[in-house]
Each structure stands twice: as C-alpha cells, then as structure tokens.
Image (cartoon, rainbow, N blue to C red):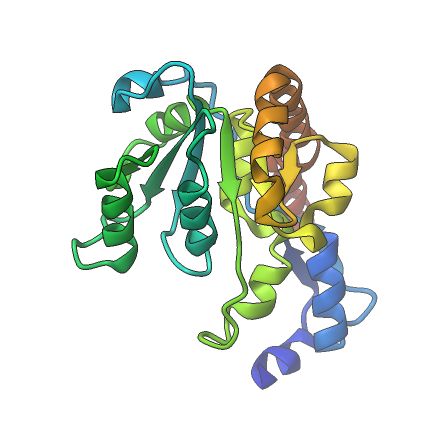
Length: 254
C-alpha cells in the first residue's frame, strides 16, 4: 500500500470503475486534482443472444420464478445468505440455480450444502462447471427472471476484500452482465447501488431476508419493466464501448 501511495503521486492517468471508488481512492492515496481520470466500469461488451430454456435444461416446473446466482461460490459472494433464502423458500413459487465459474470439488462445503438441499427437496439446482463460450453463458443468464449479486465483506478473513466488496459499485462484472442481458438483479449493498436504483429500477436492494420474496414477487409481476430498465442502465452507464474508446483516443493523442 505504501508503494501504491507513492506511485499515485506520479501518475498522469487514472482508470477506475466509478465516482464512489474514485473519491475513496483520492482520499486514501492523496491523489492530485489534475490527474486525467476515466470512469470505466467492469462490464462486458454487448452480446445479442437468445435466451436459453432454463425450465427444460433443469426440469423445473413452469410456474416457478427462476433465480440465478452466478460466479464465485464463497462466503464473500453471499452464499450463506443464499442458502438461508433457499431454506425459507418453501411455499414460494421460486427455483434457485447456483452456477459456479469453476467446478466445485465434492468436498467443498458449499457443494455439500447445495447437494443436501437438493436431496431434501428444496427448489434448487446446481450448474457445476464453467462456460467456455461467452455467448452461450449470456444466453443462459438471459433465461432467468432474477439474478443475485450479493457481496459480503470478509475483511477479518482476508484484508484485501473488505472495502473492495463494501464499495463494489460498478466494479461488479456479475451485476453488469446481468444488466447487459436485461436480467433484473437483487443486490444487498445499499451504499453501492442506492443512487443507481433511484434512477434505474434494475430490480431491488435486499435490506434483510424478510423482504426477499416480496421483491421477487414484484419483479416477476412487472418483469418487462424491470428488464427494460436493466437494459437502459447498461446502455447509459455500463456499456464500455464509448468510455474505452474515449480513453484510448485521449491516451494516443498525448
């Protein structure tokens, strides 16, 4: 960190994900005011894909609202929250799918917990291997009604994760990918997403587990509106095409 602070005093360009992270980094590293700063979110280029039939893939009843957690299966990615929600899901017309970006071993505690829930008849399936084709992955996500983007500060276990997760904002590639395919998202970090949610009704913010299923019901009933808002947010805030081109034009000009 001391090296980072030192070299931060000698830079001409700064590329960072959003204004929140910029303000925090500026304060923490005592950045100069005249640094040329570019806000480029962690977000994929646009992919025009067809939604996969998730009901058919996993044999899910057609009356179920489809909810996906995609990415890392870990404590910091909110797996403990998600497992508790699955345990509370009886009586609700929902089905969860847990997709891991890397194959989980049979000894992984979360893999074991998910397998136990499946065996006990809870509405959850697991997709335990990565996609090698990005367009196929996007089509897979597009087949759901709701995506989960949960982050839990694990600062006591890993000092590199704490503030980065609490202020994830537009550094969440998972959230950005959901928005790109028009998949409404439920997030759990009010600090990072509240201002965005005021302008773009991309889904919902989970304040506590008690209101999760009411958020799900609201999104499902007005899915088209929330999906359209998600796409609008991607186009106006997240699409990297313009911001990346602007950065390189300015860099090469100098």
